[in-house]
Image 1 (spheres, rainbow, N blue to C red):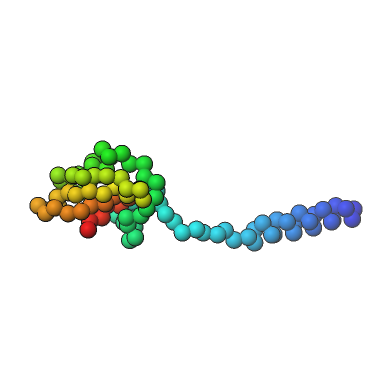
Image 2: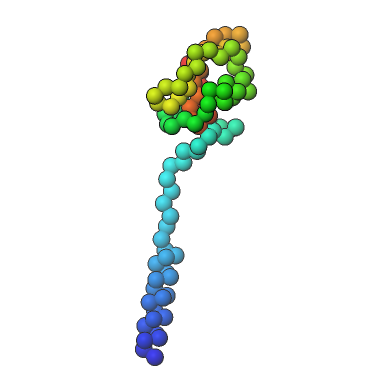
Length: 102
């Protein structure tokens, strides 16, 4: 009988410890940018899986034209030149899909 009470007490104690643990939250770095938000620190360095054709398509969809000198840097950020509203500008696109101008 004592063994059953001791076992029940240990199980109850272990269960209460499991419930009492809080989960830790890490800072979120999404793999891609969501359409209605952009990482304020863009362009973000990181391993980039976008191909040159995919970058050109995203730039076109974002309203840029005449994309030239597009290269993938060692930091994982695509950089080049493009036109926007008739003006030539430096552009960059990171691994999250964030497009920035300079």
